[in-house]
Image 1 (cartoon, rainbow, N blue to C red):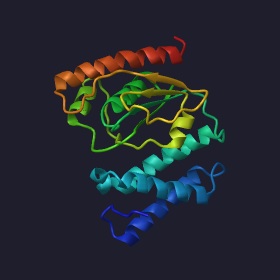
Image 2: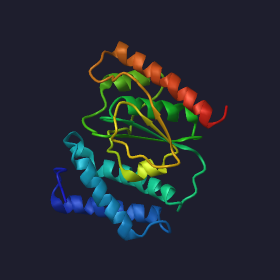
Image 3: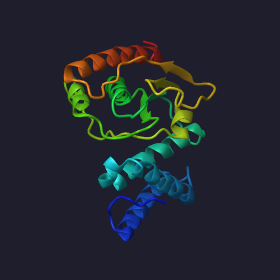
Image 4: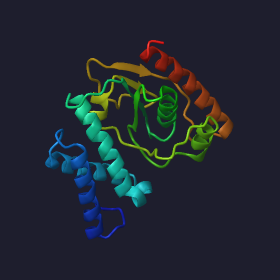
Length: 213
């Protein structure tokens, strides 16, 4: 198991144990402690591949492991979640999919569950992306590039791909959409605004369909 957070081994082990304890309590009656511990360790290793976020690995591990367990419970029918869930996918999960997820969550007011992931997540979310969203009152305070995992696809009702090719596994019973959206990576704020507005129109249309409005 990779241990590259820069923390002393004993401190890192203690933090991962604390995360396991907290999530075991949170998912009591849904998952056993052994399953939770496995997801926590696996999540840490997945995120440690992205060296740019190593400083915050324990915090991000806790957040992403909680999401993964929530999705696994939903996919396996162990929890009752009544709202539709949408997954946005792009290559790095640092631009298009983050913008789409943030905008859908902003417009849905809790009526839709939203996820995003990358086929090859890397780096950090560009300042131009966060600035463009902030102009609409959307803050990306907790967002970070996340890898694509099996349970997040299984838990989704709608999967929207945005330039990630054939990396997404296909499951029956899901709705798959492919949005041809420009990549904001390295673009000026003006161009990112155009990408944002394009995605926003698509997101509003999808939300209207999901809520039968």
